[in-house]
Image (cartoon, rainbow, N blue to C red; front, top):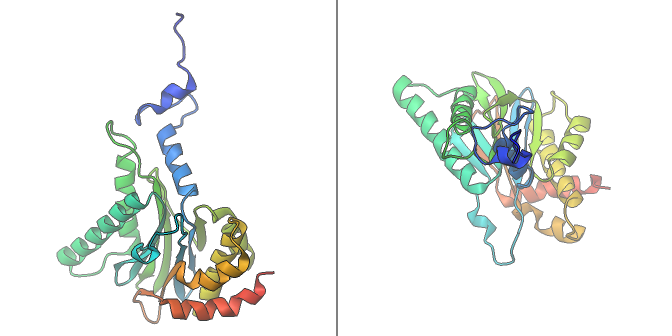
Length: 255
């Protein structure tokens, strides 16, 4: 058998092997896991940050109330994720540990970027060691630091970027298209919440075969939304009855 370059499939057998195109295929596969996750998004304005995520009933008897898609990391930081739920849960717990340790050692809250960098460093480490695999999840962090709103996304390869608005998951492409058209930096909190809910709702309808009426009737139970403002820098997760009022206001703009 002649020696030569191994077939392309050989480059995905170990995390530490680059392909001739300069890719790490297992990291590429991790990005695919993110694309198949439930849609989530973040919106940052001058005065507020909103983080929102949907949940889907993949099997009839699943209890969605036991699944948390939007969580508090520290009182001034919230997070959501798309991708492998187990990876997301582990990284959210790690982010909380990083934030708590910073408060204990320095006597002050960690900045949003400090926590994001710690998560990204851990993700990057899992792209260069044998015997491990990349985290198949992307996280969106939002919060307020010293009177300034912050929004970041971390990627499976360990990169992170700051955004004004970002959406990921199965409906991410549809959601980003809506955000690009309707986002404004000067929106107040109510307008930002309405944009977040409307974006999730439209992306859901565009990526599912569920009847519109059925989605609308249960959607307040199928999403989680959290927000924080410059005036009150405490991350707050909204209740279903509060979300239902927003859905009633935005459902007229779906057509």
